[in-house]
Length: 259
Length: 259
Image (cartoon, rainbow over all chains, first blue to last red; front, side):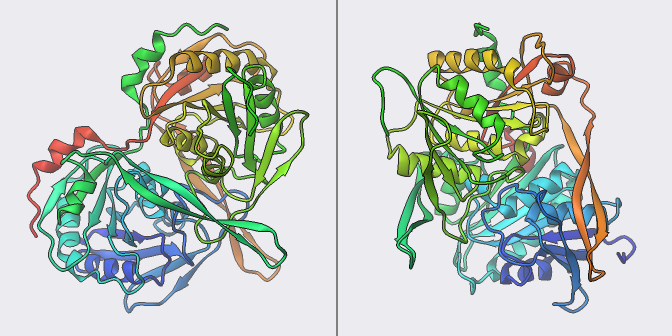
């Protein structure tokens, strides 16, 4: 990996695949800040959560999509991409920043758990790299990311200047449309997907099912990411990967297991 | 789904696949407690994390492996299995308990994030079903689960009696070997995998890589799951799916984003 003195080294990853417009927009922003290396899936990996590839081997290859950008496509998941980048491309000299996205579609609220974009950023944080996931409220391939760019640059610069608290990363979501009112620091809204399975029949009369769902938000808090986005703000949720429900430990200690 | 009056309805899932010995042992335990329905992947899905299947359709079929047990194999991930069970098999009348495992191999510490077993239990909790993931410190197909069974029964009975605090689930890990000293309620140890990629060449001289790694625990706390297991105890970590790093919110609010 080539480095220019004093400019930060920035790893870019995503889950929509290396040819997605979202990652192109993200690359354009972080090229203004530092030396960019892209390691991204060779195809769509949405909804892969924190999956890693252990039952089959991985491949990765250099590709040259955008002038002057060191880029690799990888056959694995978004989390695999981060692991490969750290171990095989940066070779132990960790990048100064890991950015993931820009995802085509929101990753607010409970979506943080299903999202390959966010899981890549979580993996970056596990690797002790300051990490940020970016997502836009527009699933379309032709989504317009231009209004997000100055926010992404400002957020990356702030993270590079201050660092992040230990074992945390940022989940940044942008509303669709030209005007963003500003940034709100938020908590993850307590919402979920009510799944629905769309049943069809194949040509051999056997049923198959498409997973679909309806997003249900029952959290009326005005300090949530859902509220911020509904009201025209970009949301930033600090995310942690210590999943311990510390408040539940005394409750469980009061139980007497009848072994 | 058939139900017997007053006995709890129990959903069983795993990530090692429906034919794994671990799930057979888990079924044997919970059959003593309630009416059992099994929905499990049709093949191994270890390391799938919280992946869901959105790019291709799902299939599921009734199978009869064990006498008197209602069982379905599913082409999807462990999380897909829970969603399918709730929506298509229980059809909205949610089970009283969701148990996942018994995993062949530990899911302590950071493994909770990569584990399909634990992600299925997380999905159960998101569905507001009291949920527990069980794992044993033995990766072998022929692992001996017999010493875990009375603990699993006691833990399930306690959860059915008390319920769990809102939006939490349990991550239960068992040491290998005949004697378990008892149960410790723990926090998730602050440990990680240092990945290593095993490079090989295919018959066409192109490189490919197997993801491997070394587990690194730098957490010396005696209140962690790693400590409990190292010292012969079964560990129970209460787990939450609100990933907000609440302590980091004031830090971020002190920043001035230069947009």
